[in-house]
Image (cartoon, rainbow, N blue to C red; front, side, top):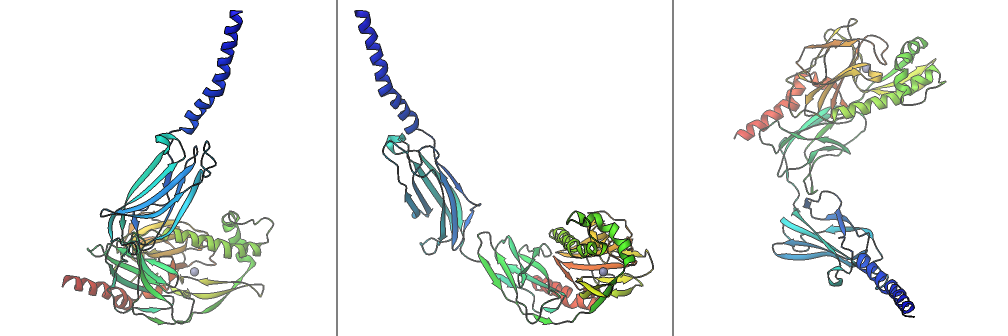
Length: 464
Ligand SMILES: [Zn+2]
């Protein structure tokens, strides 16, 4: 009998254990979990501008989010920017929200009475755990930020800016504080400014260009954006001289297609499907899509330039050569008498004897020396501060990328590689990503009036 009683007791204990201890264990593990919520701020957030946006994500995968509080602390003053409490599903259960991204449209330091300078951004997030006497786990993120609500001041140091359509210009300006981005906008095309020419690191040179297309008055201005994102714009005086460009007709012959398509077939077939396409259709794909891809490559190449003015005085033109095509000529392509395409010629074609010696137009660093689709064998030289010269359709080149070349030094020989009918040099000049008229850069007077006189006048002003 006694044995039976003890058996009954132990079974009762097991049942009691199931009823009390297991939930107790569950509560202590799950409801008293000690994992802190996570907070992540989007972006570097080193500074706060006049209307700073803030985005952050808070998460707590176990008990869920209970409350969030964001404050800005400066000079002993604490200003609450955001506070929110989250709902729960029930006493024994967790929060409704495990993860959420929050946006503050605009923190306006001036409106909330905070001056520029160092401050602390504090984000505190608490979860629905029963830890800490039911107060939950709290993560408190503190980040030192600099309140900077003042836009940079741009001081334009150059007075006159005469620009011819398709041509180049130079603006020199000084900015009042370090700016990760500054330069000149010509409509929506941005021409970055570079420091390094003058000893003062706040003085920038921005070479800019006026597209050959377009009419009337273009909107041109300087802009600077400081580290906090405060933007300043500055106008300067400019005069635009309009220029008309030529029209040209190019007749595409079967002989030309027979010679050129095999050379460029592999290049175009990596961009578009040319299977079972006729020669003339392949030509059109090359003239449109390969041209576009080649320009994209050039844009990438010129996006990095040396902060050093390598060149001096006028740029050299291919000696003893006749001009065969001009800058910004509108070309109409005809095949068997029919118009098949239109393109703009963005360089000057110069023809001399076959395989004539090609000199570097001025001192610079070789940026690219390779085959480049429609341009054939091409050399691209960086003359500093975003100015480049380009030599195309070469039969050979004897320079390598990174090499410094001096004015007049032979860099290669003319030829007819790429989309060239006969032996010639296609000579191009780029200001940043825009092809400009090389005529200006071949002209000592133009360079003196538009570039060197500006550099000299700023230099003499700085000496005073
Ligand atoms: Zn050309």
